[in-house]
Length: 181
Image (cartoon, rainbow, N blue to C red; front, side, top):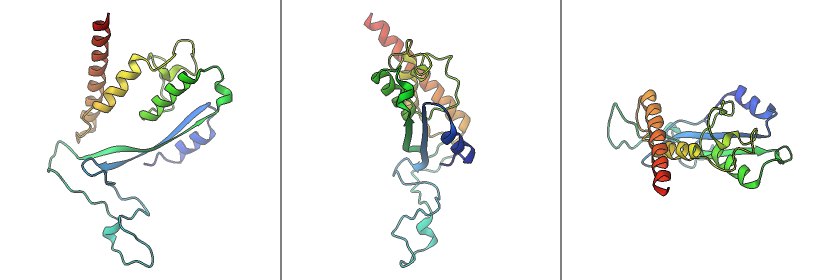
């Protein structure tokens, strides 16, 4: 929810023609309710003229099952803000720009990430001739990211599950391509 002042300063002061800021927060996967305490957030109508308790400010979880291996709390995108300096991207086509913006808005892409080693639309700003649309790598990344089971409590296990899910999606895309030929 808070990337810190340094990240905000980088977002504001960067000279990149496209920059984005994403907001996500932990929610209950069963109810969609916010699963963390947020300053100023109140579940009920709260104000100085209304009687309320501290519980009105506390998140309420309705647990489906107690587990030491899984959690029902997941990160959920709330919004993505993208600034595009279109005059500096005149060398891109509308479909290239649309796919690039789709990729950065559908996944939490680190703006500082080095992506040149990947066949990805994320490289289109620097290499527009090579990337005309979302690549097979991009499609596998998004499919794997969204199909991964991210309910594991252990962060390393969660990260491994996302990686395995991306690899499964990539293999499936390759098999589909081979079957078409």
